[in-house]
Length: 165
Image 1 (tube, rainbow, N blue to C red):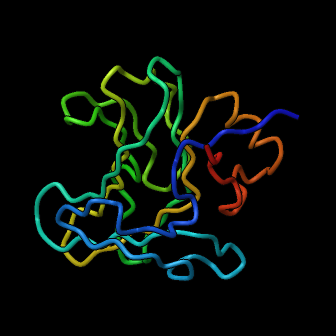
Image 2 (image 1 turned 90 degrees about the horizontal axis):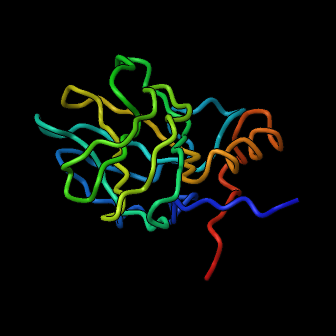
């Protein structure tokens, strides 16, 4: 068995403060919104102002690598599940790279550009609405496929930790 590498640096959301918050509030809410049988490390992103509402974090991934982004996601039951749960961009925001559907899943494969990538957690459209996001994976399609084979749900409930250098 080969090592599955997750480039997302904080799968358990132990350091939510490292995610920039733009027109939103992000909290570590392991038990909010998720059905009790599916509790896993997650954040809740709540829209606080109008505009482009999101949380962002730069992720260190080797340049030129082909990768995917995946997550689980949902809402508070009163929020329309539209848009994207996660989008990937260049750090300057000049180029869109990929997106994950609003209810979670996996993005299409894309190549990491020379300037790197930033992951954006997308908040719902209207002030006061919330979305939860968890089990973030950033890595190769091969590693994602191996993960899905190990765990049919496609996630290890946050146990897939980044490799320590």
